[in-house]
Length: 119
View 1 (tube, rainbow, N blue to C red):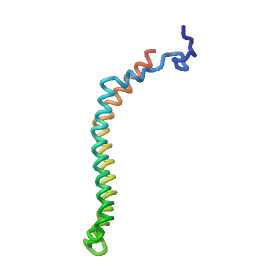
View 2: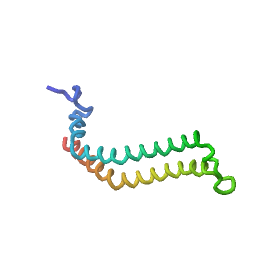
View 3: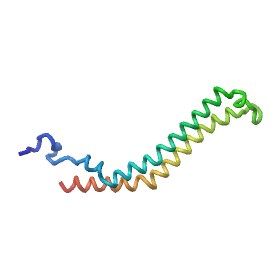
C-alpha cells in the first residue's frame, strides 16, 4: 500500500501526471511534428545563408568589395542582410507559433490541468 509520501506519488499525495503517456498522445506528437516541420528547414536555410556569407567573405573578397554606392559595398549589404534575415525568421516563427503551435499547446495544457484537478 502506498502512503502519501511513497515514491511514485507527488508531495500532495496524488499520483503524478503520466508524462510518458502525454508524449505518446496524438496531440503532443502533432505539436512536435509541426514544430520540427518549421524549425528544421528554416534553421538549415539560415545556416546555409550564413555559411554562404562567410565563404564569400573568405574566398570572394574582390566580389564582396564591389562598391554599390559611395563606400557601401556588397559585403556590407550582405552583412546587414544577415541581421534582417534574423529578424524576419523571428517574426515568422512568432506568427507561425501563434497560429499553429500555441492553440495545440494550450489544448494539451488544459487537458493536463483537468487531469490534475480530477485527482
